[in-house]
Length: 253
Image (cartoon, rainbow, N blue to C red; front, top):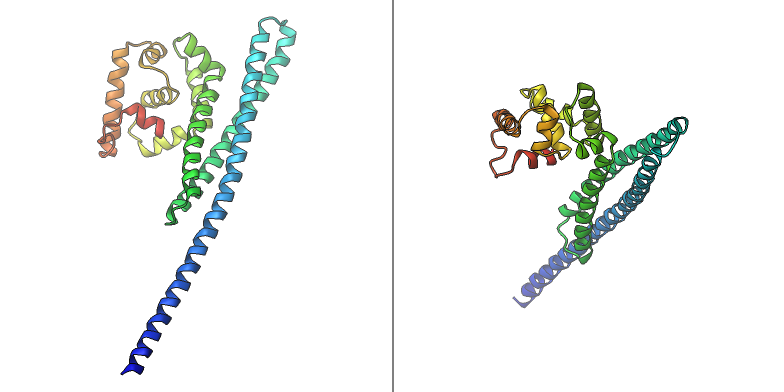
């Protein structure tokens, strides 16, 4: 009997030992995964910050060049405008690069969250992710506000010509890749006026400003927004059930 008990105890201890070894191996594997993902996250974050710094410097240069235009001769302005356009194009490319980096960061972050291991480092990464989100939003707004047509419309709202809408749509699709295309594919029942309204809302223009752009009353803009919201809900009834407004939904689209 004692021998049997000893054998059973030995077997149990062996099983426990194997489970401990397997657990330790699994834990080490998770730690290696976290280290690898954390290292890549830090690399992407550094590149994102470097791009942000360069974009901010370019924006300062653009503002200085625009201020100098008023004091220059017509012959000198052409070269000045060329330089401004080059800086704007570089910022556009940097913005696209940052969007790709942000997607990489979010993909890695999702992988990190799927690893059921709580560490102080993971908490630090959570904080860093929130900071990156805030910086991305701030830089996007800066990129939009420094666009010549947007800056003009915000300071002196006026009726928008078809060519103006083309420029604005191009800007939106560059900053938010394929925005209008994605909107049309998801909601083919939206009218051309709906599309224009979505673009203006996405750029952060107010109802009163949009009313001037379209030569209608603010009440008419609000009514158009309400009709558009119903058309969107006709295809996706679950939208806006959480109390989210049309503007909030478009900002996240």
